[in-house]
Image (cartoon, rainbow, N blue to C red; front, side):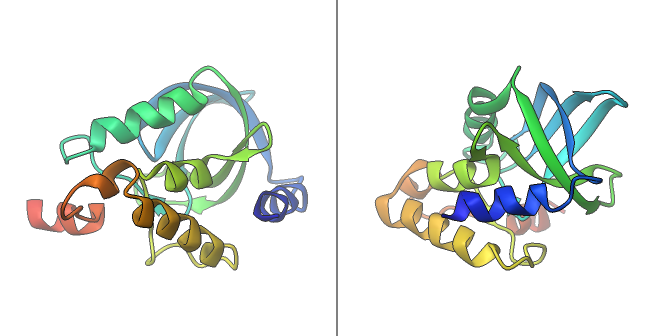
Length: 153
């Protein structure tokens, strides 16, 4: 049911929906996508994954790579971030990449930025992973990336 909500979100925005092929996974929540307009850096809307130097950071990158590298995706931009990346909801086939990262246990819903109505459903997916100790939730005390970044300053 939730995938239908996101799919409807994408289809409701045809003027803003974009397609392309993922050429690089920078980290668990950032992709480089080849589009008709050139290479676009896409930051996944609403989630945050461990940084590459953080515990599980390389795992998150590997999970995202296994899911989308070389695949055609559809993405619905919702804005740009401070680094001029396109922030978007990403679909590949009938699957939402954000959902897959959450259910695999390699992402958090990013409360500061996840403000759409479907974010509540995403929090439920995160809770399933946490309860089952999937991915980073198998660790004793996983640290949210936004807290980890703050500690590194």
